Length: 241
Image (cartoon, rainbow, N blue to C red; front, side, top):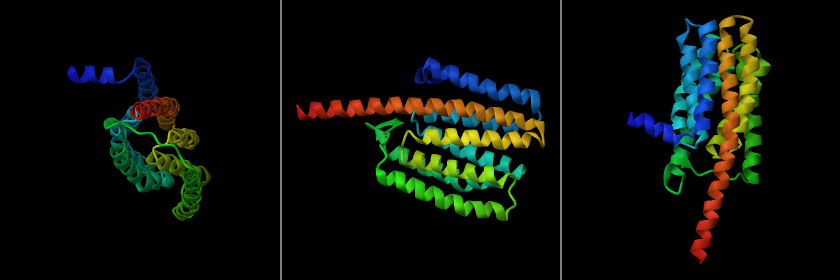
């Protein structure tokens, strides 16, 4: 009971409501279209819960994202979406680990539950663009070699995934926009899968829930960043006085 009360106090009412709506978006389609595949629902619930913590800048969200990435990679392999499998197993999971370490090393005012949000430099923007192009080209040929289904959409997914995970590591609020774009790409990808098997409607619905959660994440990180910058300025003024 104490743990539940602590959980409820940590999140705002709006965050709890948004999380509950996202959960409903996942569970209902699962019960209607794919009640026999418990794994799809489990990985989706894990993913959306990870985003709730990430939206708060909590490093625990990155740990959950690592588990989500492993399970999602397995699901993608079963659908022969090798692009998604390679992206999550070879990029998202390792980058989530790097982000976890980065977030733990950079807490805001020694608060382990909130990462210090950084401001990107011109160099960061250039590196993001250059690395994104390199990763996209390399993975495109890898996907082509493995005969990946829907290779164009899968390649675009790699680009948006890399931008998202790299900016997560850099502790920029713009990582959420990268994930938002990736959600849209994945919605298209799994809609195509629905033509093969209607059960994947539940996966589509899950990424719709992720899309709304990632939108909130960007909004909340922008708010947290302004709060942190204000606190830093106030601290500097007090020190000067």
